[in-house]
Image: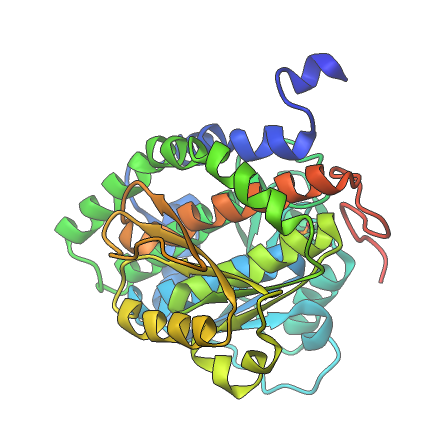
Length: 366
Ligand code: G6P
């Protein structure tokens, strides 16, 4: 209803703008990093495990892909991420010392529930869910849980559920690292401080909306778009492309930028907008040469840089700069302008933003 929507036109827009609050709520009970955030038995489980297997669908799967980078670089634990509908039906080699992690907004996705049951039937008994629905089937199914506090998400295209899942997954990374003595007290405090600053950092990203509205006008006239990212921003490129295709029906693909020359470069012409996620991380110089490859073929670059990326606008290169570089938590900030780009492009095209054709909020049957 109009009352619930307040100043917003759609639930999706409202939910995008609720993200600072959703993240603050998700962090509310977190006084310190500790395994018990995930359940009473979490400490002994985290000590025992030698790897992590993440199972999820859709946007939640991309949260899992992002977490793989954190788990391996911060907790130094091998992590694999699988699409639940693939894992449940393939022959795999079970490892009883793996922590099986499901990620699900609804806690009711049929494939993800079946995947964790399948893992258990193979003898993998350490299960944990990152879930937004405290009384869902998934929470009953898993031994350990972290409940995100995104609140009810109405828009079919997931936004605040995704960013709060990332917060839960970063906390999981820190708790595993701590249980295995791979985190110093100083590092722990620095990560906590960065987490607590996220709501304020997100507010300044949301303030970029007017710039994104201007880009959306150009996107609304396209039928194809390419999204590029590297490292932990590659999953963010995938999520940006998913948002665009879900609600605007523009065909969008995401590539790890280093793969450009192995195929997608063949598609690049003046008609192809190429959205590039370009924070100032260790891969920025490599990303800049990927961007030159696009420009040399006439491709139009739409770059989300940050304060330190040293990328300036020029012919065919459009730049929006995020106010600060956010290190390991940068994916949580960089996904927000991509949500806004999809939203405003959908508005310009006049599609049904909150209820895109053929899609359901929660897929409870196979
Ligand atoms: C549907 C929704 C997506 C969601 C996916 C997984 O496809 O439209 O937004 O990411 O299901 O849902 P879950 O509730 O398991 O996160």
